[in-house]
Image 1 (spheres, rainbow, N blue to C red):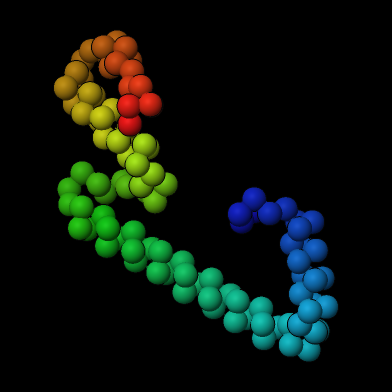
Image 2: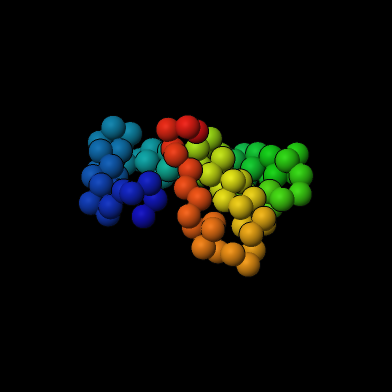
Length: 102
């Protein structure tokens, strides 16, 4: 499920929400929460698209998890190594990057 939350946790949160908000206001609160989640997703998607546009060619497959500096540098270096030695995969597999240097 979403954010590694199981069905038991979702049920527990629903029961807790019913006690805190009350059964008569719960549908309205749930609707508002869904609208906020939708707005946040749209904002994240537009920010990712804008970032891809600003970075230019070569970053079309960029994912938000790739923005971790270590992951980003490793991915870019591995792509450069693959471009330099397309026929020689054994050399690319021998080239190891020390993560402490990143």
